[in-house]
Length: 413
Ligand code: NIG
Ligand code: FE
Image (cartoon, rainbow, N blue to C red; front, side):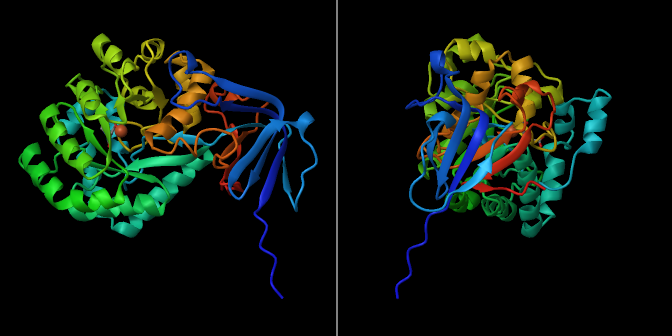
């Protein structure tokens, strides 16, 4: 007797008060389309084998043919796509609460960094931890992100800066199902005299293996970190191996990040708190995504990035947490949504696109993530609120009621 093939699992999320999703589009949501969101009142989502197969209004839902369908009651709740955090530094151990206390009394982030604290103090703790502790750390931070509705996260290495810890960090991020970025040029570790000598080592000894583990490479282009010449050298070598390119830039000073990103065809420039008019215009005319990190600007007391100018001039904008122990100890994209609405003056529809499709594009997975539409992964957030806009409206609220990843409800703990 032959066994009948197993039915793919089907799940109907029904009677949703609302469903909000970025509208269909072939490219990124920008310009006049930056806030194109489709809203259905009284909606359902049908998932099969981990994918969305149908989205629609309850009043149009006909009988479902062919086998068992599990049901999940969405009454009183709103569905949005699983959020995509395209910029985190979730692979570290230890904390920087002492530094935070000093900053609260007036010390600046840059002063602490120049004095050998800051990033390098996390490097010391992370090097001492071992790979198992790194896997535990990323997994724990990922679980916190999930509780806030993040279903896809990027995480960077950059707290090892030696061969062993950088590669262990990338493996740990993969083990936690994150999208790994090699931030091999984050800071100059103490055993090297200068950035050039460190890059000689990193490109010869780490890049060949990092390129097999990571999806992208990133650099911190800033005074007291790497300059534009060093960043060009590092990113060009990474691009040769097939890695996508990202840049931390214009956080404190404009040091040539935007022209370099455009020249090299980078996926994104992230931060942009110090960007002037020419930078805004150049980004707006390019396909490089501006990744804005308002939780980091808030945490460091820095000016907010010029989101309104970027959007109004047509740039592609994404939002992310920048979760890390020094400049943004915050895993919550709903909090970032609130900051985007109140500090960046972004429209709530623009915010939804900047937390879903646009960051998915930065991570190279926009064909599967960031929308509730047939063919996309069944990654859903159910907000326990009557209107999807509570995502930004409920400041530090406990808005996330349930999270589905590939059609499976997650235990949020
Ligand atoms: O994006 N600025 C560079 N890197 C991180 C901070 C890392 C840290 O302080 O540990 C950032 O803000
Ligand atoms: Fe960062």
